[in-house]
Length: 389
Ligand SMILES: Cc1ncc(COP(=O)(O)O)c(C=O)c1O
Image (tube, rainbow, N blue to C red; front, top):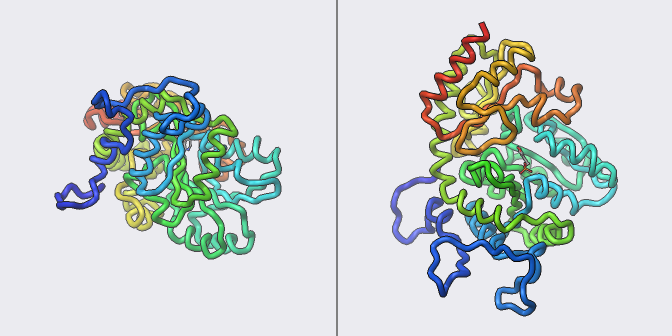
C-alpha cells in the first residue's frame, strides 16, 4: 500500500487521485459529482470534440483520466466489460499470429481464444509461465503477443512479470497483463515492463457489483490508437451510466482494498490451519510457491483466497451453499464476500482435460473476501467447514 506520510509539494497520493479526477465539464454549475452524459450523439463542432458515444463520451473521459492516473500512465481506454477489453486487444492481431498464453487464465479468456479468435486464424500456445524453463520459448517461438494474468484465476499463481517482460522486450514482443485481481494499487504491470495492462473494472475498481466495465492502460501511443479504434470500430464501448457508477466506485478503492486485504490475510491464516482444508493459495503466505516474487512485485497479497477441500463434488457444493455471508456467485472484488466453484462456474467452459491438468478440481473453492467484519466471516467459514465431518 502507498505510504500515507505527508511530503510537501509531491505528486498527489493515490487516495487523492482516485477522488479528484482531471476532468470537470461542470465549470459553470459547481457540481461536485460529474453528471451522467446520457446522450448517444453530440452536436458537430463542439468545443470538447465529442461526436457519437460509440467513439467517446464525457463519462468515458472522466473514468479514463482516473484510471490512467491510478496506473501512472499516459493512456487509458474504457470498454463495456473486461471481455470487451480482451477482444479489443486481440482485434489488433491478424490471422496466423501466435499468442503465447499463461495456461491458467480466466475461463472466458480461454474460451475467447479457443472458440472465437481461432476461427479468425489466431493461434495460441499455453505455457506454465510460473516455470522459468518455459521462458526460452519466447525467443524460440517469437509470438506476436504474450498474454499473462498474475495472480491467475483461480489458482493464484504469481508470474515473474519483470523477468518475462524483459525477455519479451529483447525480442520486441508486446506483453499483456490482466491485472484484474490486483489493480494498480497492488501491482503496476506497465512499470514491470508490460505494454498493456488490462482490468475488468467490473471487479475491484467499481467494487459494488452493480456495473460492468473494462479498461486497457498503456504508455504507448501506438497501442492507445489501437484501443481507441477498437472501442468505436468494434462497438466495444462502455455505457455512460456504468462509467459514472465506476467513477463513483473507484473513489473508495484504496479504502476498500485495505480492508479486504486485511480480512483476507487473517482468513487465509485461519483456513490454512483448518483440518478440512487440503491446500491453500494466497500470494503473501510463505507457503505460496512464488511468495518471494509476490513480495517483490505486489504491495499486498490481494483479497482472493483459493483452497482445495478434503471433500467430493457434492460436499464441496454443500459447503459453498451453507455459507451465510459468502454468496455463491460469479465475479469478485465487491464489498460483499463471494464464493465460487471454479470447475462448474468461472471455468465451466474450459475442457475437463485442461482443468484436470491445471488442478481446477471438483474440490477447489475460490473466495472473494469483502469488507464485512472479519470475525463474522471467520465464524461463517468455520461453521460450514465443521459440517464436512
Ligand atoms: C481475471 C479476469 N479477467 C477478465 C474478466 C472479465 O471481466 P468481465 O466480466 O467484466 O467481462 C474476469 C471476470 O471474472 C476476470 O476474472
